[in-house]
Length: 123
Image (cartoon, rainbow, N blue to C red; front, side, top):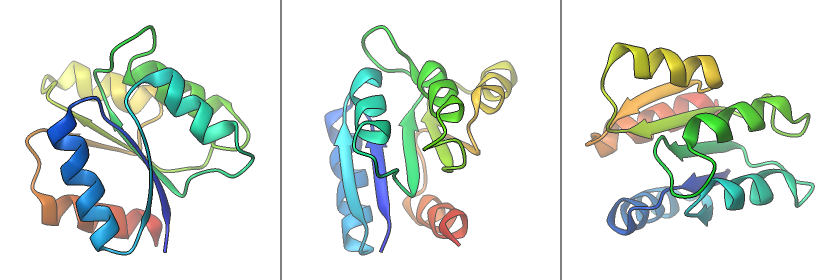
């Protein structure tokens, strides 16, 4: 089905997302930080079909930085980005959407709802 880039540093959340997506028939590209996300998304010459992006990542690039960089790259400019985060303030959601997120989903998330959003974004 689709190639989905999962960028998540929490081991348990990462494992859950990978299991859900693979069980749904998707191929999962996985990494735990912003630099790795950009390398996977833009460095292979093949863009993912969708990105699930943690809002808070270790290292120099957080989720906002990664979303903005993906939007600024011609290979990934149109790829849907679902930002997954525990940051629940309205200002945080506005910042995520302004950085380039297509959807903003709060943790903890409902797995069926998330899969529904993924399916809808993939068309």
